[in-house]
Length: 46
Image (tube, rainbow, N blue to C red; front, side, top):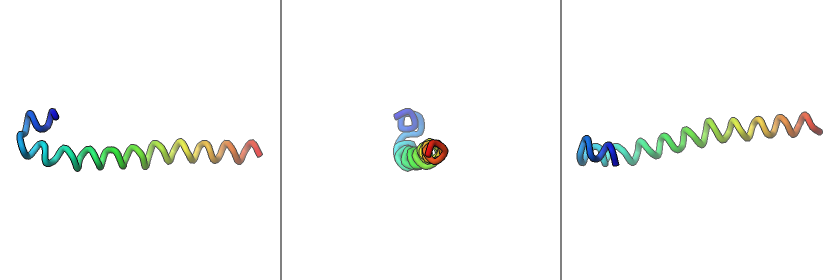
């Protein structure tokens, strides 16, 4: 919404793909990191 208010139609057009890229990056780097740590801890406990 902020990009749309500042940059108008171009801001709205760019905000959606930017949000999608940010979401994918968070899921890929943060979630994968958490899952890898859980997997390594599970292997140590066994």
